[in-house]
Image (cartoon, rainbow, N blue to C red; front, side):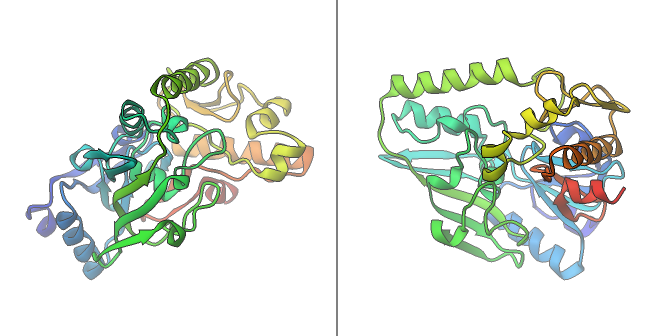
Length: 315
């Protein structure tokens, strides 16, 4: 990896603490941490990783990740503000994969474009949001995507149209492919700027009221489903009804403000969080028969990603 770090691949550091690079503030160090500045640099990194069979984890702001306390014995590649350009022409928005989602939403509002209001409070990057078809209010960014520019695991540049991405609720065909999203094109219809602004303000006010903001967390931990939502409600309501608000393991706790959030009280470990996830799933399964699967992804020390409930069930 020293050979790779010596090349012009952006900012590269050894033994970087991953707790500095995710919203839960949990995780050990990465053997090599890289923040690239271009698609060319990413391509070189991907080719090196493939040739040398080195574990690779690609992240944005780390808002949907739980890193193991042992860190990552490989390379962590962060697509961030070095690849965050946003350009708007008419109804078309072209953005880098590292652009901050709230900034994208604000710029679309200033241009009088609607459709991204639900993204205003999501503190992640565009690449990560597209990868998981993220959003809020049961909406997803994929609704407005026209095409996605990516580098596949061999380092080759490709462009996929919306239908090739297979966007469904909190899912896309990009997941698990080893690709890196470097650019996204969106099409948003014209709207009234004041109406769009008021919708965003309303969303942010609702988030401030409902969600914990002062303690490190990853946002919603558990996924909703259409059947579950119709019959027993969203995950937060289900977990609260099970009497689990305030349940604590080590320094991780089910938020007393919103039960679908797990907060880091200070120094929480990945094991603390996984144990809480396991206990919540067991209680809900016993009580109402529904399986609460995780939206958040767990990152093993060998670089493998999986829904956190899969790892939780194994402890």
